[in-house]
Amino acid sequence: MSLPAPYYQDDAVTIYHGDCREIMPEIPMVDLLLTDPPYGIGAARRGRGGRQDGAAVAPSKDYGDARWDDRPVEDSLIAQAVARSRWQIVFGGQFYRVLPPRRCWLVWDKDNGANDYGDCEMAWTNLEGPIRRLRYRWHGMLQEPGRVHEIREHPMQKPLEVIKWAMLKAPSSERVLDPFMGSGTTLRAAKDLGRKAIGIEIEERYAEIAARRMEQEVIPFDHEEQGTRVSGRVLASVEGEESTDADPPMLDLLGEIRAARTAKEVR
Ligand SMILES: C[S@@+](CC[C@H](N)C(=O)[O-])C[C@H]1O[C@@H](n2cnc3c(N)ncnc32)[C@H](O)[C@@H]1O
Image (cartoon, rainbow, N blue to C red; front, side, top):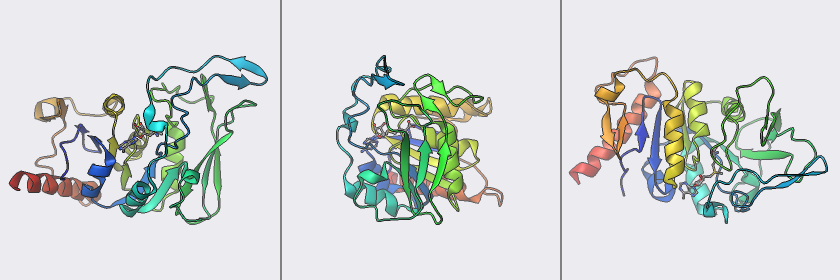
C-alpha cells in the first residue's frame, strides 16, 4: 500500500484517517514518536463515575462507543512505531512487553485528589536521564489553575501542556509522529512549538476533531483558495514551497510524502 491522501494538511501537520498498520510503513523516519495508544483497559467505554474525596461523582461525559480501548494494540504494532523514530515517548508503556526496561519514564501527576482514578499516567521513553514528573491538574471539570481551559473531546485526551512538556524532553523533535492520534493533542503541541508532525487516526470523528484543532491558528486567509481538496477537505497547498535553511526538516518530509504519492500515481 502507498500513502492515502491526507485527511488534513497544512504547513506544520499532516493527518491521515485510517489504520496505522497500513499507513505507518509508508511514513518516512521521524525524530520523535510521541504517542498514547489504546491501553486495553476499556476506560474509554466505561461510564466513569467514581468517588472523589469520599463522595460519589457523576459519570463523566458519554463519548459513545469506544471499542478501540477494549484491548491493547499488538506489541508488533508498537514495535513498528518505535522503528519509525529516533526517540520515543509512549504513554501507557507499562502495558507493552515489547518496550525494554529503561530508566527515563515521564510521569504526569494529575493532582486529582483522593478518588478511584489513577493518580498518575506514565510514559515509557528511550530518553537519557532520570524519571521526571510534571504535576498538572486535569480531572473532569478541574483543570490546572491559571491555564486556558481545554475542551475535552476525546475520552482519553491528554492536556496540551503535558504533551508539550514531554515533547520538549526529547533531544530532537523537529519531525513528530503520533500513529494513535485521537483528538490530535500531539499534533497541536508540535504545531505550537514550531515542529512538524504526522498523525494517524482510525476513527473519523476523532480525525475531524483533530483537523478542527489544527485549524485554530495562523492559516493565512488565502490558503483556502490555494488549497488542494482531498478527502472532502480543503488543504493548504504544499506545492511550490521553497526549501529554506531555516526550516529544512518538514520540507524534506513533505517531499518524501509527495514522492510516495507520485510513486502511487505512476504505479
Ligand atoms: C488513547 S487514544 C489517544 C488520545 C490522544 N492522546 C488525545 O489526546 O486525544 C488512542 C487513539 O488511537 C486510535 N486507534 C486505535 N487503533 C488505531 C489504529 N490501528 N490506527 C490508528 N488509530 C488507532 C483510537 O481510535 C483512539 O482515538
